[in-house]
Image (cartoon, rainbow, N blue to C red; front, side, top):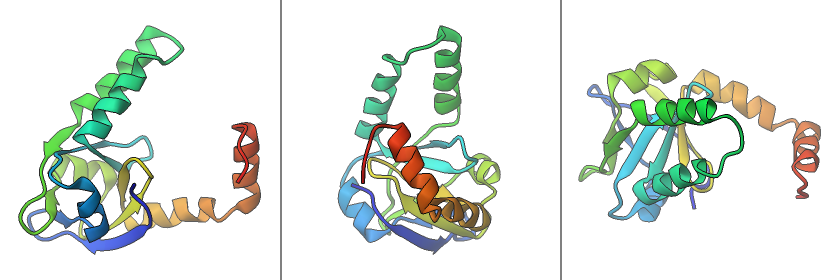
Length: 145
């Protein structure tokens, strides 16, 4: 499970060090990095991505919306493997999309993890600090914490 938040720098080639706790979870698995809907990047293990894609088949709603979502995920997805130093190479396309240049925030999202521009993460983190809003969201989803 991918938990916690880490701050890392990209090297000159666009490689990002993956936190050691995440590397333990990843093991020998390949990774899929794709665009996220919040102008961030989402990273799955290959197995996790296959499960996520499988869940798209059970979505309710129009076939057009499902196709658009699949295209969004697949057209920008990169199949990667950790290098010997535990890094992944983020393509220029992905870095531009998420507006990541030198510094990045890597944050766990339980079954995947996300890579954020530092300023965008600060804004997102501020939303997460709204306990009343989070409680309202949980109630709406039928959950309690």
